[in-house]
Length: 347
Ligand code: F1P
Image (cartoon, rainbow, N blue to C red; front, side):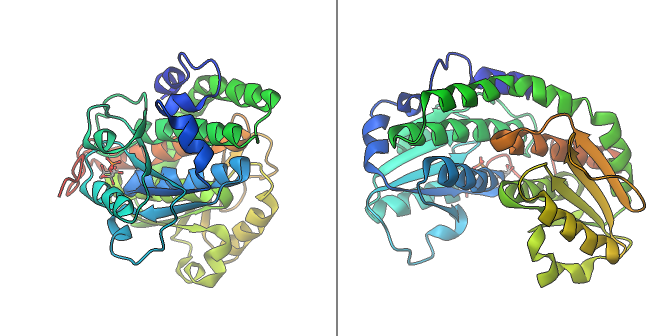
């Protein structure tokens, strides 16, 4: 992951719409909303991008599960940038959703995709090819983080065209992106601690994942990874939703993974963590180095080496991928070829 994220920035000397293809400037200038269509892991990268694009570029974003989109009477908006996200570029549901959007008159299309020769790239006017290369396993890992890196570049490009990115901000964001490989390597170095947790998880049949704000999609992705490769039933919720239902599931047997970066939502998250502890739930908290969260009875804490601001989801998801991976290894499942799943779902 450090290498492919490093490759993402290779040759990128500044933010420019042309990173997304010829003619991108004219398209970005015309659009006033974004519609993201994707499935599975790619859908969660789209959900993360919604937080970035709305907060940095101030453009409203709708993220739709591609396998559902065409079965709804949605109201089209002509000045929409339709963004499909796909590791393979061949996912039938995402291609069908794209065609549906076009049939509704939305002609500005862009794909974020791993494979330059894929159907998705051929079907879209603009394209950003991630630097993930080939994923060995069926479950997306580096595809996800490189999609996020591409989506962050898209956020900055949209902001720039909208006059919402100063030169100083551009320099600052690019500097943070360039430092990501080092920051990810530091997360990978947490592996021994994560293995110890994974051995506990391997003995469980259920897990809850909690996150808030832009880390809610990361909690969703952490739960999906655990389901896909270890077959442990896992669900993710925005932490504030706990009291609206899932709290009923929390017992001493329930591990609750909490994505807890040291951001503006941390105090709210801490009160959600207390709700879990009051019911005996076991908290497994991925905090940042400077978070004031301490381990104790029923509260296990691993600290990520640095708080990474807007790009924090890219770091936090790597720790969740490692947790899922090691839980699967401890259970003896085939992490590269999970049962019932295909690399690309073309039917
Ligand atoms: C979407 C997806 C993947 C998942 C698995 C099945 O594929 O749901 O996220 O890991 O491979 O397909 P894609 O459109 O991103 O290729």
